[in-house]
Length: 261
Image (cartoon, rainbow, N blue to C red; front, side, top):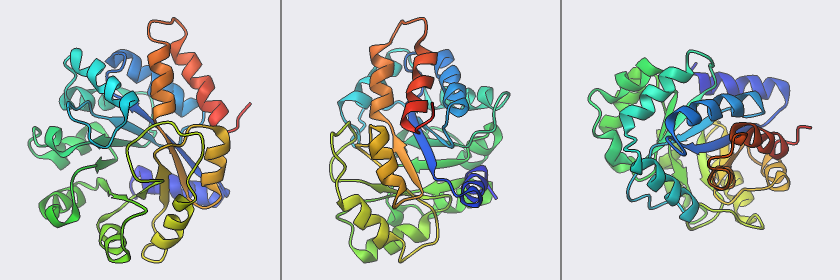
C-alpha cells in the first residue's frame, strides 16, 4: 500500500476521519513551508496537500492565487517542490499529495520516477481529464504513486464512474461549483455528491473547497472520509507573514480545526 492508502486504513481501524490541510509551496518561502508541513503533521494533519505555484490557477480563488503569486516571485518551481518533499522526508513520513496543474508537471522528465524518488505519495492534477490521462496513469501506476481526480456536484453518474475508475488513494469531491475559498456555510450538495460517488467506488472520499471552520470539518466527517481545508490556512499564513510565531500559530489553527485542545 502507498502511505495514503495505509493512512486511510489506519484511520478506518481507529474509527476516525482524515484531516487534509493545503499549503502553497514557497509561501512565504520554502524553508517556512517545510516547517509548516511538520507542524501540521504534529497538530492533527493526516495527509498534506502541497500546492505547486502556477501562474494561471483556474480552480483557485483569490487567496490561493495570491499565494501562488508570492511563491512565483521567489521563482519557486516544481523541482523546488520536489526538493522540499525530499527535505521533509528526513523528518516525517506524513503522506503528501502534490496539488498541481498539468503544465508544471510536464517540465519533469520521468515524472513517476521523480515523484517516487523524493517521497511524493499522490498527485492531483486539477486540469487533467481522464480522457487524456492514459500515459500519465500508466506511469503513476508503475511508480506506485496515487492518482487523485476531482468530481463535482454537476458531474453526471457516468462521469463519476469514469473518474472513480482512474483514482487511487482517494477521490476529491468538490463541495460546490466554483473556485476555492472560505465560505460561511457548507452546501448540502456535498453530502449528496459523496453518497452518489460511493455507488461507484470503495475508495475514501475527501470533500474540499469552502471548508474553513471546525463545525464545517465535523459536518464533512459525518458523510465523507476526509475534510480538506486550504484557503483558511493560506489566508492565515498571508496575514501572519513576517510574524516570528507564524508556524506555531498555524499549528494552533490546525488543532482548532480538528477539535483538539
